Image (cartoon, rainbow, N blue to C red):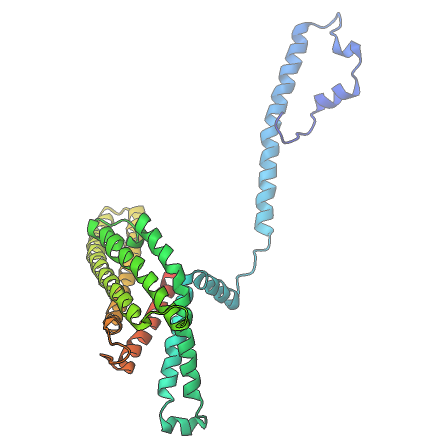
Length: 330
């Protein structure tokens, strides 16, 4: 007997109806061989019925699946909320959202600062209000950097900042020692600068100086990120060429499964290559503001004007969010 209950056969019902000793013990007119033959035939009949029952149950389950009403597709609002939850789940993407608000607030404040625009909007408080939001968001992003030290330490120990396994060993080394190592120094210096700005009577330090020193390590990180991205770019281009050659070979052999595999591989490489190219653009947008804030007198004698520095940061913010959206949606 299996776990599934089978239906009683005709022989079973007859045995249940008459269980007298005379039926259990062979009579004088019957032989023990006859009893054994009856038991074997009953066992054979039951054995053939069980697969039949299982087949009937399987057929009914398939019919139920076909007739079952499929769930309705998610609405556009549900898709947006699912994407938004994924995007805002981590502190990294949350900082990107604040970065968009920060630099967009500055842009609005800067554009509405002129007298002509003020007279057009008939509200002279627009620019100062958005300037105030911009300053508050800047400090809020400093608070989020308290998460950064341990993220950098994890990347240093695990090598996760390399972004996978690469043929060129320099990628993992630069990501570990230059990128993670510089951030392990950058974040504590940023914390000291933040405390000096927010609690000047408690933390008596030159916050501008600590901020300038921290940005020098940020420059080192950007240089490392740019080097790693360029090395990945070169390696991915090589892999893309090899994938194209494999695709041509599979087409000559008329290997349909091989063609599908080669196309999927080529598609994945193209997506990774596009991600690396966007990362290079971000590094180029970052480098001038990072150098600007690394100078000793960045606050009192700025090297670049505010529209140049903040305009580059605004462009990087939107580029960064675009990169994250493509990574989530692919």
